[in-house]
Image (tube, rainbow over all chains, first blue to last red; front, side):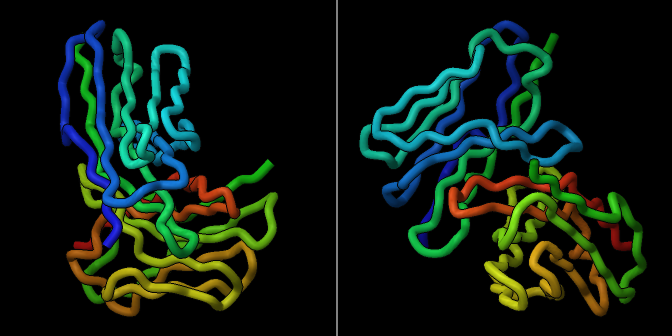
Length: 111
Length: 111
C-alpha cells in the first residue's frame, strides 16, 4: 500500500544548530503537508506544498518538495527551544479523503 | 472560522468498561471527519473516517466503533475497553483540500 517514510525518528540538537527531517513517499503525491505537535499537544498544520520543486519559508523553517513530487524536507535554521516537538509529513492517498502520515521526527533542543 | 471541540480531555477507565468520546465541528458543513490514535511517542494511526452522516469507514480491526449521528458530530465508542486501548485519541476534520485540523485530543488510560 501507499507509504510515507520519514527520517530520522529522533534528533537531539544543541540550541542554535540546524535540523532537517526528510520525507519519502512510495507514490507521487499531489501535495505534501507538514504538521508540528508540541509535547502534550495535538498536531497543528504548518504548510502545504503543491508544485514540483517548490520551496517555501516560514521564518527559520524551510520546506521543500522534490522535483518528482515523492520527497520533501523540512529544515530549521538555528534551532530554538520553542522548536521542540514532533514534525510529521503527510500526503493524500491516491483514492479517498485521507492523508498518509509519516511516523514523525521527534526534535529535542538542548539549551 | 472553523473550530473543533473534543471531550473529555482525559479519562481513566477500568478494563471492560464502555467508552464514549465525542467531537463536534463548528463553522463548516459536510466536513470529512476522522478519529486517530497515537500511542506514547509514536505516530498517528487512522482508526475511522467519515465523509457524511452515517458513513463510516474503519481502517483497522479493533475493539472500537465510530458513529456520525449528525453532520458535524463524530463519536468514538467501545463496549468493553482493553488495556491496549490506552492512548491519545484525536478527532480531526477536513474539507476537499485535504488539510487536516485536529482537536486537542483525549488522553485515555485503561487500568
